Image 1 (cartoon, helix red, strand yellow):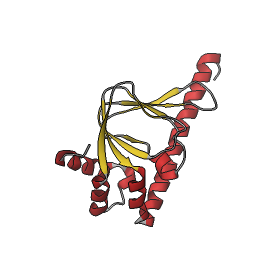
Image 2 (cartoon, helix red, strand yellow):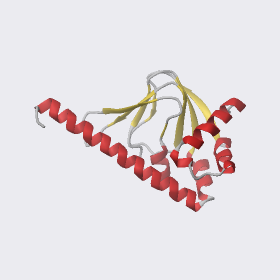
Image 3 (cartoon, rainbow, N blue to C red):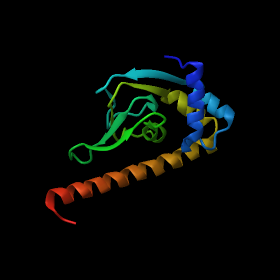
Length: 163
């Protein structure tokens, strides 16, 4: 579905607050807003699945999602809950790697979605912006891995009583 004028304003303001878009001009942010659509997901729906190709970038407009990750065949671990204004899916899209987590709708959700091809085409028009997005993606992936390693360590300590 297309965005309403009010949703486009909200998205513009939201993108200006996201680190990825910190180097964007007003015109560049408007270009990103112009390629966005919205989609609804019912509670319990898997939005993206770990290991799949990342073809979309998502921003939560309404509702809440949970982020789950599985490493080396271990049990899935919830690593975060995200709500309005927060986002996911950018690392797989920007880096061209498989999704590093599964995302599930915890409530009815309305998500703003950027198609990967259109998104990458906009980045390709500005190499310095593309490089900035790449650096932020690496930083966020490193932060996610740190959270996962701490979660695993805590789980190991709970199971085996070690410190």
